[in-house]
Image 1 (cartoon, helix red, strand yellow):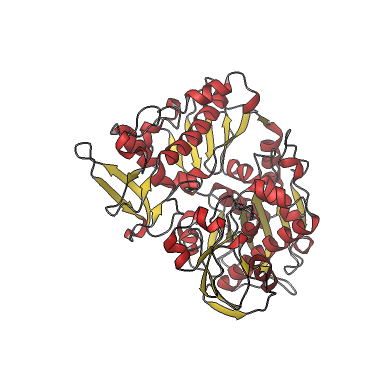
Image 2: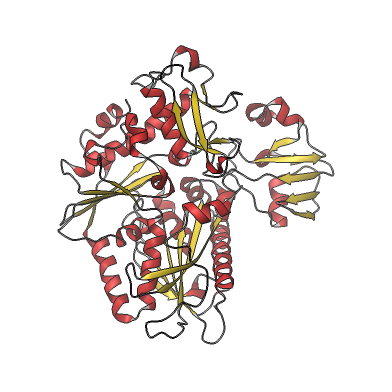
Length: 532
């Protein structure tokens, strides 16, 4: 078998009748199985350039005749019977990872790498690395400490796709895979390799030493959701995936880096603390960037697969998590794609003739709809009465969906609208429950999606409570910012590190988790919030 792997080519051998997945694993190839290889999604596509097996039932279910004729097959179910040549296809999230690095995942500055100047005017030799371990993307930043607010300077950023994707695209799939001890270790190893590679990339770009005697890299801070940190540490995450969803490993941990990172020795490494199974260290890191004083009431919202949120009323901190699904990242959308060049991110519909005007990232040819586009098209359909207050499309578009491009290749379907309704209802009801009649002074929205959304463009969705009107502030990747800020505190000396640790303790110890599912009236409120 000849394998064309993202520009590289290698030859391997297999046994007639062997699963393709097993051969790729043996060859060390990188690929994605969004549903963990369960055969539910049909998204793990591979292209045979020659020697394609006869299409099976899974190809008939998920692929068009044109795709099967072109040699496309479903990777997780493919068995090979003869010599062949294949090409690994990049998913939409992999097509332009540099775009994620420079926009969605950038932190504080775009300064060029170099030796920062210390407070005494001499060249500083102390650097740290902050890492946001996400389910889909791992983002990292090389930082140095400064005396100015926010106390750090970003010298370089980098990111990569989380290699655990071959075990599933979501945390539930990975929790299920980790029930097997051997697979759990494989999950740990692949994400460790990802992190090590990012550290080496940043160190090389910054021209700093990270191994040997007196390395210039002095601190590493890792944050992430609870499941990702469990898998990084090799802990069994089974309790996170079943009621009552108990997380036993939430405390802040300090260790030498080679306890976890085999090839990055003797550097102080901190794993930030979490609050619960679904309100993790990434949320704590985001809250760490904000001031908890009696002068401001604020609402913090991280828009992702889980809508994690917190409300600080000047004295008490309440937190919760609403299962929004992957819609805010365009997951589960028929023509959904990541925020890459060609993704439709802004949409307007003329109220007279329903003519559609679209804008794509990079002004490239449209390839699909990203998260902001998904929300805007839904709002526009409701505003122009193409979908009613219950989300039902008019008869004209009910069967085939509403076309966004002239050729009709990119459409928005009835099921897409239903998925948006489920997500927005979860956010709205979770926020109303957490506010409990209070009114915030500011609303901080975190995450790549939250950074790009314009509240006025999605006002028809009723995704946010009225108490949020005019108060929303987008703060980007707050998890990575928080990790960078904590790293700078470590670099600045024992006193600042102690103060930073005290603030983390204040956040985790004062937080009170609201369980939405057990709240009186939540189900009724959730159903009502699905309407527009």
